[in-house]
Length: 111
Length: 117
Image (cartoon, rainbow over all chains, first blue to last red; front, side):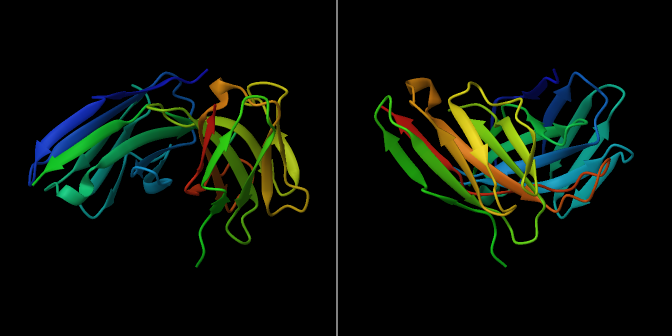
């Protein structure tokens, strides 16, 4: 069974810092990898989707990379803002279309 | 346009009661997924529909859990004889379903928080 791990579990940074969130997965046979954001009491919002043939995707201040062979992905957030405070979840899709999620990184950006 | 909606948002049940959770996917989305998210954990897959066909129910934790999507749009997740360990947030997601071998973004609803006393 696919296992997805996210490090660190929680992260606190001052506003304006650049930061990196890490995700690793055990089975490299994936179709794609997605990064989501989850705010308290709300559902998940998709941030970036990287297809297995791609190495990175960018959206605004966010950049996600994928290294399938080593089973790793990173989410880079530039110039962090208090509004970025949330839990960030990494998920991979194998052959069955369902997502396998990590346990998330809880980010707090301090004004 | 409207996103995925779920009802109720919160449900409190006494142990042993049956509950039904509803999901309205985005109009035209072929694929529908149910996930269970325990406190402090990431969501875990329960079941997957393509139109009205339930193609994968491998994540359902016991035969007390049952899901249906009879007309290929709205879906209901039913839990019979609820137990305390069923307490969690139940998330529904839908996607366009672009065909075999192609994956697309899943859009999530706000979830139903179930508390079993």
